[in-house]
Amino acid sequence: MPEEDGQSWQAPGGQPDPVESPGQDITPDHAPEAGNRTAAGGAPEGSAAPPAAAWSAPGVPPRQAPGYAEPGAPAGPAPGWGPPPGQLSGQQPGWGPPPGQFPGQQPGWGPPPGAGGSPTFAPRPGVIALRPLSLGDIFNGAFSYLRDNPKATLGVTFIVVAIVSVLPALGLADFSREYTTMIDTVIDDPYAEPETAFPFSGFSLLSIYGGSLLQLLGTSLLVGLLTGVVGAAVLGRRPTFGEAVRAMRGRLAALLGLTGLYLVFSVVAIILISLLFVLSIGLVMALDPLVGLAVLFLVGAPLVVLLVWAGVKTTLAMPVSVLEQVGPFRALARSWRLTSGSFWRLVGILLLTQILVQIVASTLSTPFTFGSMFVGMLIPGEAAATVASAALAFLGMLLTGCISSPFTAGVTALLYLDLRMRREGLDLRLQAAVQSGAAIGPEVYLLEPRPGVPA
Image 1 (cartoon, one colour):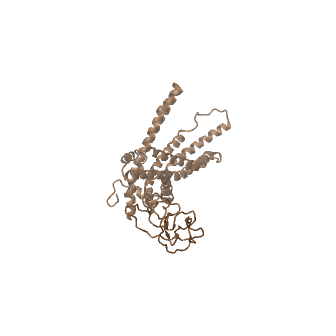
Image 2 (tube, one colour; image 1 turned 30 degrees about the vertical axis):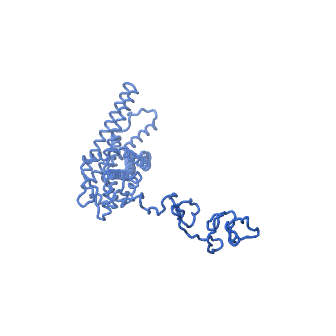
Image 3 (cartoon, rainbow, N blue to C red; image 1 turned 90 degrees about the horizontal axis):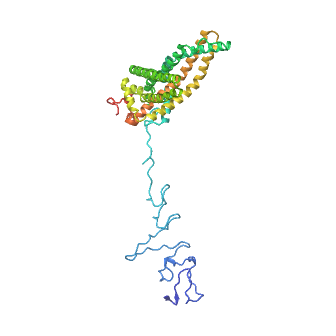
């Protein structure tokens, strides 16, 4: 090694040169640890002496001045701080990756809130959001329009249900009177032969079953009458009872025509099912019970499926007739086309609706039904017992009809609007009409909007 003034240079923390005297020590007071074999300033042990470094505070490494690299030499790392804890050597120094970003991705800000795939919320001016509806949306909307429009819905429903409940109430009262008479006869003389094999009159049975058919037609008529209320509730309007009645004046003839067509369809279905049942009974008695049951199943099952299919395909005719302002036959054809491809979805929703309605109706009507049947045992006199029984039956039918029928009508009307949103973009037209700020009327639901209505 070169020597200056008889003394060789030594790296801080290094071992003295063997030629030096043992007592000679030039190690600085704040040298690195003995395990570090790198000379101060980054010079390896045994290299030439670097220029004298400037003084620095104890424990702080001196800053190294950058130099120029030799031509052709690879560029080394830029001077500065080392990688922070948890960052691999060779990564770009700086802040770590933001939450949700993997190391190695380009650092930067993430997308602002609401950008990219964030959901867009459809406006909701009324009982439903203006977008295609789910099952929960349909049921919530059916309950909401009842809650928000009690006068219009319950007023119209009360009138229709009161009219169609008179006949079945009288039939049930007559049936209860005959049933009470039969029970009294059996109690008085258990061994006496009955005067007739079937103690119930034709009037009571015809009134009960005919009245049930009349109630079904009344529910169908209510779907049309309340569709206008549902259409207004979707747009955030709350029509009064008078407004709802005036809005239906121009559509009453078409609704009655549709009700008549439904009546013909129902009568034909009842006749076909009755004939099939009678034919099966005849085969059971004449030939073999297995033959009769086989005919009943092989013919009855397809017949029931056909009737259900036709009923579902035409179930939206009432809302079509009211909101699109078309006649009965055009409404049936329009309902047939609109329900194409959605048969099973409609069947499921309508079936679930009927299950809920029947549960509620049975719960509410059970006390009135039993009361009308056994009131003859408590009230003396045949006439008074019949009147009391009919009154109780009528009240029970009126109560259940005023609750269940508007809900069924609301579900049917919302199913119609949902299919138009999915197939024809009705939701976009309604959104444009709402956002325009102009007054919106029922003409927005027309298949071909009038001038001035957003298409």
